[in-house]
Image (cartoon, rainbow, N blue to C red; front, side, top):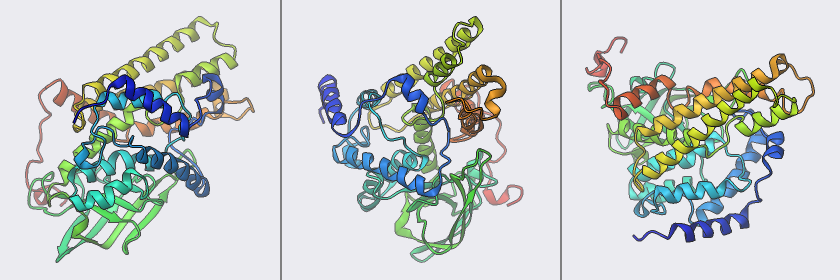
Length: 412
């Protein structure tokens, strides 16, 4: 397949975006009105309205042929290069894109990709297309109370009963489960092999009997995460994604997409350098040499992250699966969020802990309370450093003592 000329394609993208979106506001006015929360904390009715705004844009993008740009054509994508995807993101940044949510990102960038790459032709046609267009929404049922960073230690079990799998277990930290139609779930189907080898992936209907969603109240006040309990939930074998025992490959590929999405800046998460600069100006602090040093440091960090995201995107093979380099952009994103909150707190002092009525000040508490959670989302910072060390820098791997059948591990 011949690739379109980048410059001509960029102009085409810009023209299309102008038909569906408004131009971006000036940085300072945008900063003043910005939502500084890292994770959404909206009431359910407001969350539904936001989801519908996001879905309208995603559907328009899909119908225009701009969704899943680097996914191969035979998998349901546009078959373009990572450079084209980077160009689209650049052009999109000049417009007021509806603020996305974790559920939209998981549906389009994670679950749709997993089903496209590992699903059957029938599954791609029925589910992947619906996820890419957000006609259906999907959450990610991976983490468990005892299997977070060590995801391969998961204990949710799936037992085959003819053409149906019976699933029992518990998942946690599931974003948007209360609104999702399906969940991409990992379950242990063979405890008598090493823990990574005995896992299978399923696409679970969230309204199936035996599936219960319970919201988790966060310290920031919202309840965007959930626990999901599965008690004898029966899932047809037709909703198995990949081969039995291929779940770990499905998981690692999906998590690489998650790290790429988390680090790419495609969705605004918390405050930005522009917000901090606007805050410093509103407080009359920009002439302070120490403040100027803090601002310069934050600007450099933001610019380095943006350049790294662009470099990773451009060096990725068109349509290829994200590699461990995605861990670098994810790590930089979480560190930048933390540093941004620290600088804002340094500027405001005690005012950050009480609502004084000053515009754009108390809102920073949402950023400060949410930023630590981003160090966990998509794999902890420690896990990212291990991946970078072992798979990018080729350092010796850590000693492992769990290369035995899962059933022989302590506590199983």
